[in-house]
Image (cartoon, rainbow, N blue to C red):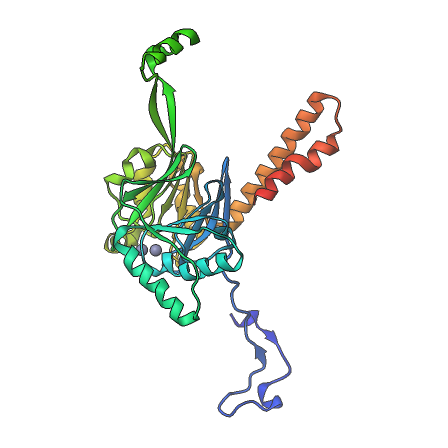
Length: 354
Ligand SMILES: [Zn+2]
Ligand SMILES: [Zn+2]
């Protein structure tokens, strides 16, 4: 530790330090940098957020204008109209008043928070007491969402709440797309025949649903994590507080997930990508990466949101691949210059999304 200190000739006693303070000839270390947001581009979705167990969790999916939890008001979260709270522990709700305040300050209208019905009252009371503290009223809206109910995010795309199991009332969420598919028995019929059948009052389609993104929130393991919303989602964002083999008991007591639970769930989850969040501060990234490698073939689809170095490298590869495709396309087309398509369109377009 000492070798990182920089020798300094000025001592506090030379400049008349306060009584009781010993002079020293080293300057103190700089404080650690504050948390940086994690970012993953999992086509076609971006996962943008910050998450450390007990400190903060805020995860934004810009494509749906939704953010899961509000432990820290990130820049990305301000662009979401909807915050879906998993539960009311401080690391998931601590920045709610600030989020409403910043949105108001930036003239962004219509922000809402959805939460488990049991915590809506206390949240409203907390926000009401900020009116007394600030001597001004910041608009806010807290909406209860019953487990198994839905809120519309986009046309045919909803956010569904799923009851989970933590040390207080808790919800997980799934972004689900509703689609109408032609019934099997009608699939080979010509249009004119379909029109005739419909005109007789028959319904030609069946409703299907496609889970796009699922978020576990803080939770213990349970059957609910094997439902289709999790099993068939393209991207699952899962808490994984504990990695250490000795911490299995702690995971059960705190009603959290351990990497061993994730290893089991990976057998049930079809997801192309599983993003682990809510790692404890004590989990070293190097150890976490080592333990992930033990997951075998599943390791490739598992990401750590806060592993900035690995994620940056992955993003640079994505950029390079797009640039390469764009060069090939332009050479294939034959006419256009390589510089034009390589340099600007695609690679910058992707960067802008970040
Ligand atoms: Zn937490
Ligand atoms: Zn919690």
